[in-house]
Image (cartoon, rainbow, N blue to C red; front, side, top):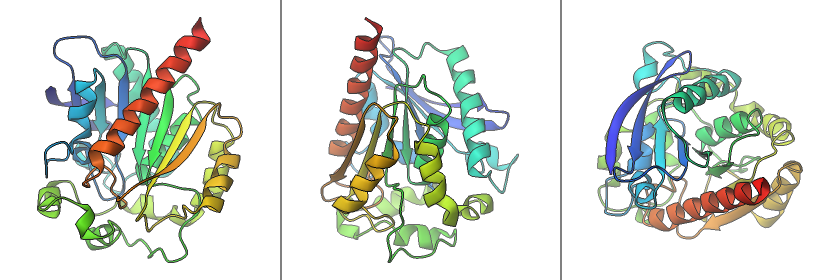
Length: 280
């Protein structure tokens, strides 16, 4: 696997991790968007063998571009307070165009969004019908009744991880470099998300997949909530919802990360097959 740091032009300079096969063209491309209080390194977990999404995706022939969202990583200098959701989506869409001008994205681009990154992915998907699909983890449409109020601190971010036993030993120490405060502009819109979700998903026309850890604590993910979520995306040709067993909020860092990542890539292959079938 070739792993490099790159910068994408989204109007704001966005730092990103690039992982791609070294011996063959990429079959397709995954644009990965991390959650609040994290960074692009979330998708390249190193606490235990097999945790890294980047490594598994490359093994299966895909390119991964994991972006430090506005207010994180290299963009924090230009936008230290981050950006509201609509502005973030516009920035990511411009970054997608920059990426497409640089590389052959293969069969197309799948968005992979975790937590707040899932919100951004949905906002991008609502405006980009040519994407392969969007795979959303740890982000729903209705907050759990017992969800703690977000205050943007690293301490609060960690409280939402779920039981420690779900993660390999050393995960918290390994995550020191990817955990930090949440930019202020992200927090201001948190209470508006349920209405924003409904408005965004009503416009999405690409396949969607939503995954919740069985120990997810921020979002409602009971059968009734998942059924309601699916009805909100009536224009999407495919809407899948489900649970990742023995997982907390941070699906890509736990013991079950490898299984979760295989399911993400299986969904990607389904999206590629759908595009091929529709084109024939």
